[in-house]
Length: 408
Image 1 (cartoon, rainbow, N blue to C red):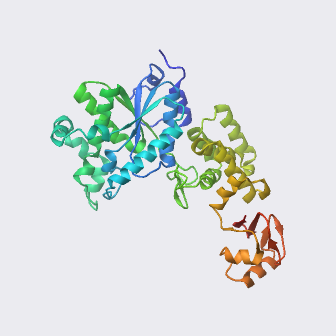
Image 2 (tube, rainbow, N blue to C red):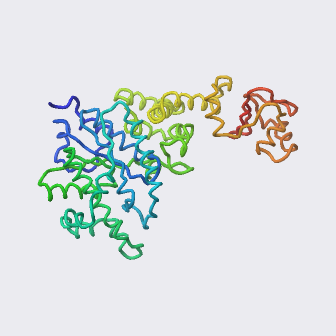
């Protein structure tokens, strides 16, 4: 039976189309197929670069294709060398096991309610001995194709740091993943980011050589920051992670809230399921009233809801309104206050304003605190106060433009 939606058109409009082995990507609009996409457990969380590809995967699933989501227990023991200037440090087996579990849990959350199966390439590689792998895989991979890879050339060329046999062989391992999934689950397509194109093509070639079957790769471009022209997904504090222990829900929300005007609608196409009409409306707001930042507010709430749930997104929205929008702290729930307390210094009620400023480390002395207060540089719950104030209830103290203390 034919698929129910023109997936190719959706992928083009949202900006997910990069390189593909399909002569015509409208082939994706025909019969349902099985495909796979994977993340190596180099960390215990995906970043928003991985998340962009995951959103592309969601569109494939919604169009009726069957997804196999891979956690790379085997490939993670080596580490993908592509794009790396130096040899990776090997992770411990315990760290790999922990990371695999964390990535699988993120799969379950992002793809909740969808039809997918999680697979781990360690499950099939642990049964393969070295000689069998050389006979089955190594004998069918021309060395010229491996030596021609850009990352190999850069590592072996003048000034390169060199490359180990293990990292050199990484693409063989990933290529065999495709072979195994083709045989075990009739998988005929691998989805990947643009930086994985070379590794993915290795699998297509292996399937053709070993089984005489046709297989395909479809890659999505790396997301580029519209304002800087650089790879999207970094903040002043580093990478933006999906795990709230690495990037808090509040900071995740703030990242999206602070994207540039031009980029907001484009990021919404990639990172949300907003419709064409909704994004056209977003673009109109950017043109007509960019100062209101409605596009960024919509983007921040929508993406945070997908990753962390609607309740957490609304909590981040309320906390932001109190910190930067003049809303009263009385509007915040206990959960909201917990979210806020993780981001700014927190002090208990029952001390004077001067003592609270000093104990929080905001100022170094009582004298500095009094001078700041008397000079109008400190506000409590949006109002200027005297230095003799006692803080006896939930309050938000603000020093200058962006320094806050929560009293609860």
